[in-house]
Image (cartoon, rainbow, N blue to C red):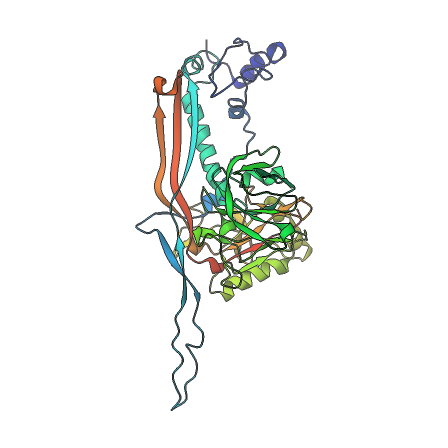
Amino acid sequence: MANPSLSEYLAQSQRGLYQSVFGNEYLQKQTYHTVDTATGIFNTTYGRKVWQALNNQTRFFNAIPRTVWGNTAGWRVRTDRGSGRSRPVTETGSLPTVDVSDIQTVSSLPRIVSTTFGASVKSVFTAQLEGGVGDVLALENENAQLDHIKEINEELLAGGAYLASAGATTSFTVPAAIAKHFKVGDAVGQYDASAAGHDRTSGSVVSAVNTSTGVVTVASGTTYADGDLAYIYSRAGMTSIDDIVSEDEARVGNSYTRARSYDLTLGGRVAGTWDAAASVQLNAGTGRSLSLTMIDTAIQKIRENGGEPKLILLGHDQYFNLERLLNSNQRYMGQEEYQVGIGSERTYPGTRTGLVLATYQGIPILPDADVPKSVSTADAVLGSNIYVLDTDYLEIAVAQPTQYVENRDYFAANALVVRGLLYTMAEMRCKNIFVQAKIGDLNA
């Protein structure tokens, strides 16, 4: 008998009040996978193969050029030209005072992202019988690959600072919608709102994140209260674009962060020492409507700092807001293929991403569902941020391309399971932070 069609397969699986016709133990696995008794065979693993309910878009990851890591662990950033070193000199006048540039050290080491999956030997066998899903390991490997790249995309677009709505010595609570920006292993700093600007930079390491409740568990020693600011000053994963496009003492709500992009210093950059981004437009935790002036300002600041915007990155909500703004002003977004530049070289149009995008002032507009959102002083989630970027200075440096490791050592696992692992060693670099811009605190 031939394998059933998809419609026949779905009909069989829903017989008898959603009980599987293949028996209660069909595809029963160890603790790695469990069969959902409410939906029978179509559990949270295999059901998504038929109806893919997850957003697997990784547009920002696709838009940033990938390069080989090379023999470097960092670079230098010139933050000051030196005062008074250049001036007019009269015929017999004295020379300008000798001064030196202010050079900051940026360290950048590769980060490791891993994804695991597994299946019991019983499920591997039974899945290949009539009516089964086929090669379970191949299925899980395919899904794990999607999840792996999605995790990298989420890390590249992770937000960095949010107000806590509740707290304790070992945890704080943020809106559930943005809890995913905190990753296990991240070092979190705190701005104590009750101490009138006291900034604790010793931080705590995240040990668990509940994306359903928004509770983030950290090491003991720092007490969080309602209204305190929790911000990531050192990431376990890849550096995000929000870390890069930051500024000294960035104001989030009524509190201030200390950015630590690329581990500049333990305490972060000190206010007034040097600003990172070309322009960071926030509104102290109060939502406001998007305006073309905000985008024009970001573009202007980037050009004033010697850059040229190559990409406008935003969420889908701001994409529609921008479209309505342009329509109301009788100005329309053009269509052009995205072209990535690396130095003086350019890719063929569309070869890197294959996407056709709208443009504003000739700059491609790329909506991505993972773009971080701002949070108001009342702990309400606002709209997504907008990033205006010069991608000539952005790259994903790959130290080790994605590797696949499979293990069938039943004794080591103490179970009859086959386990798989995908891991990538890479990091996002920004060689010129001064030509990137951000707009936050926007309404959805």
